[in-house]
Length: 38
Image (cartoon, rainbow, N blue to C red; front, side, top):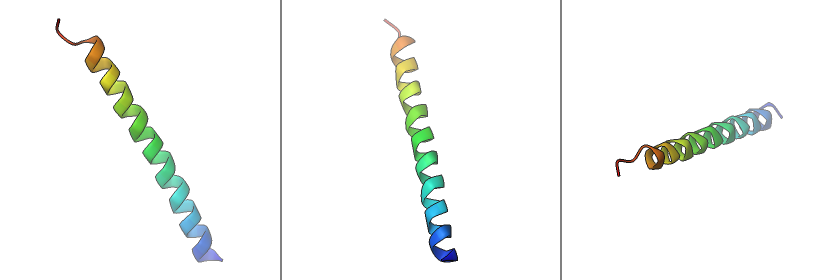
């Protein structure tokens, strides 16, 4: 049971980190477009 909880916790943490990385990447792309030299 402890092993399952550990794996489940690691999966949730990994998922949250992945979401944050995706959001940061999207933000950078938007800023790159907005601040792009014309």
